Image (tube, rainbow, N blue to C red; front, side, top):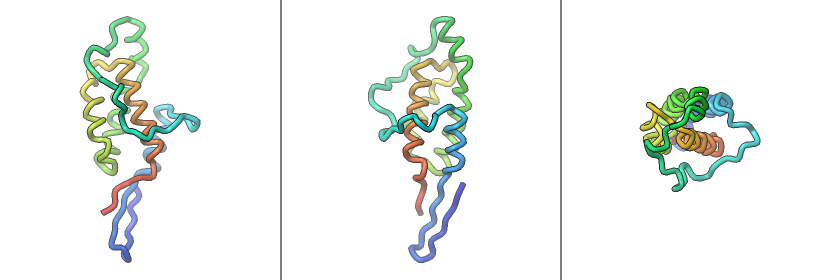
Amino acid sequence: MKIKRDMVKRRVSSTQQAYLQKVLQKFLISGEAKSASILLVPHFKLSVRMSPKTINNHEYMSHVSYASAIGSLMYAMVCTSPDLSQAMSMVSRHMHDPGKGHWEAVRWILRYIKGTIDVGLVL
């Protein structure tokens, strides 16, 4: 976390740019991936019905670090990105049995972070 103090303007700001870069690298959001300007678009209607039903889908999701991604994003949300709270509430409800649609929503949140990586809190 990077904390700056501006005595003239009487402001304190904090960002997590280095941490968020590591999170993006860990979850394979490459440099050429587009960033998202909207946190979650309306077409992400997450539900329990999106949980994997076939063996192939279960196999695919067993290789996805869904819980780790949620934990990393929750840490960022608590420290410097409260704008993620509603989206994190939606995706964290499905940690017990996430499907591909849930993972796509998490990847969308990661793309949003890529576009807002330098944004933090100012007090």
